[in-house]
Amino acid sequence: MLLAGLIARADLPGLLQALSLGGAQLLWLVPYRVLFFLLYAIGWRALLRPYDPEHRAGVGYLFWVSAVRESIDRLLPVASVGGSVIGVRLLRWRGIASGPAAATVVVEILLTLLSLWLFMVLALSLLIEHALATGEQWHAATALRLAIPASVGLFIPIFLVHWLRRGDVFGRIAGQLRHFSGLDRLSSGAASLDTELRACLGRLRPLAGAGVLEFLALLSGSLENWYVLRLLGHPIDLRAAIAMEGLSVAARQLAFVIPGGLGVQEGSLMLLGHSYGINAELALALSLAKRMREVLCALPALLSWQWLEMRRLRGAARGQPE
Image 1: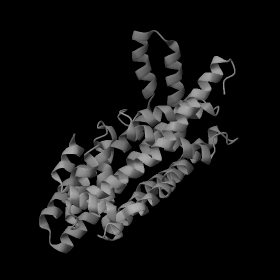
Image 2 (image 1 turned 60 degrees about the vertical axis):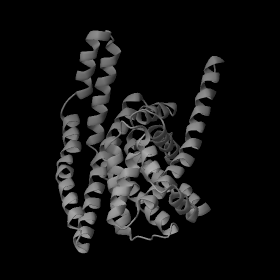
Image 3 (image 1 turned 90 degrees about the vertical axis):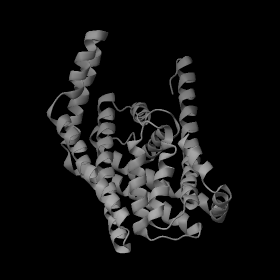
């Protein structure tokens, strides 16, 4: 594996020494992650409000669902889509119809793509500024080369939004599948999803609010870099922390087919850390600290979800669904 290879090539005693410098204070990353999920939950709640005026799925419930979704995408080999499917299922537990639930999840994914693009552009700008200020021409040239595909990447979420607003995308897909399956119900559900998507994308104020909150959630990860490297004895400023976070998150998302982005996050942090005088061992220690936080946040979410699934199965077997 790429991650194992990177660790094997590093100075293992130096890596362990760097992690030991952080000690128990690294555990503060776990409660800090609450901010990330809370921002996502508030934004998701704004999208759901027209479909759930009774607040059956409130911010607290959406906070938990957001944690479950990320845990599935991060720890399970589902190519970063399994969490969205489970998110729709968990919304249905609160009585929200499949069409509106799926529509808000699809819109949230589009907003995440746009937020990720903005974050990547911000990170590239800060990296170029740093490279030019320190006379590192090679790093500046590399960042400028990355800026070209990054600018083109903006058209992906814009095209998807235009595509979903103007046509019956899922209806057409279902129509093609119906020829093979013969299920009329599939077409009716897809048509409902298309309708709800157009309605969701037409509500500009909730869209803008959710988009801003998702961007702030992504940005909040930068403080993890700043905090961990400070504990490890190599403090950096907030600009460097934002640049490292934005580009490492972008690299991980692009490599979504790799479970957990194993090795991708580590490699990108090592490459970016070199620009800021951070050696390979410190960059790996930073990545492992973030991995530790990831696991400690994900396991309770996954276990609670499985426990509730088992309760519902037992209730259904007794004829009394939970």
